Image 1 (tube, helix red, strand yellow):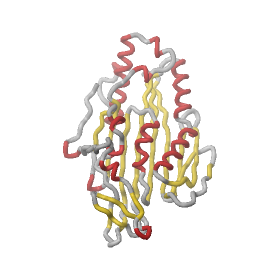
Image 2: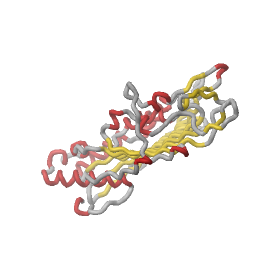
Image 3: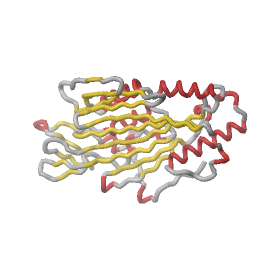
Image 4: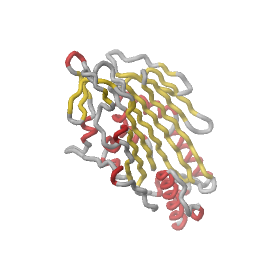
Length: 306
């Protein structure tokens, strides 16, 4: 396995777990209603009261790569059946609805689309939770979910290389919220919803809001790393590192699966018909492909693996 590129220590943000396994940032990321309904946040151990609507925009974007090997005709058919079941617009719509529930928002509008021959999209507009839920309208055949001034979008992209038999399915997820709701609350659920060999995540807080004294606030919650919002059990299976620009409230995490269990990547007759040497070759090819996606660049010496 090619060694992961680890950035300098000055760029690495270490996770600090608390007594129950969650990190402090994840534990403290909450909001409450104060006196006279004013919005109160707790940041860096201090309680702040916001003046009016929270104008900060919180954007969570990430790619999930799911790798497979399917060279024979039978295995390709089984792989396509897997894709149709795992990544169709109906399932993406269900995931979008659950994300909306987790972050305590309401769906305003959802649109879905299945593409020919493969791929699907869901787009949703959402708004903050209210006493009365906003009306939900669904426009087929596309899926889009919208929050008022906030949105969720999920798109899938299939890719297959005939020469190598390697198939990659990419899921792009974008969640942008304003007000008190935060997409970070749904991050772990989203990661658990898809099989992922490589995950590349970006989180950024933009704009500013004001407290009751008129001071500008450029962030309204504690965060040292995106990894703070992913369970330790999930992270155990991945090599992960951060490149964060904390002063700009800009956070970046990359993850790749540590161990490749070949049977999880095979379909059809290839699960039983491959010889020992062929299985070793395929495993090396998968590992090299995953590493290239993780590092976002082509690596040398690939020709002998295909």
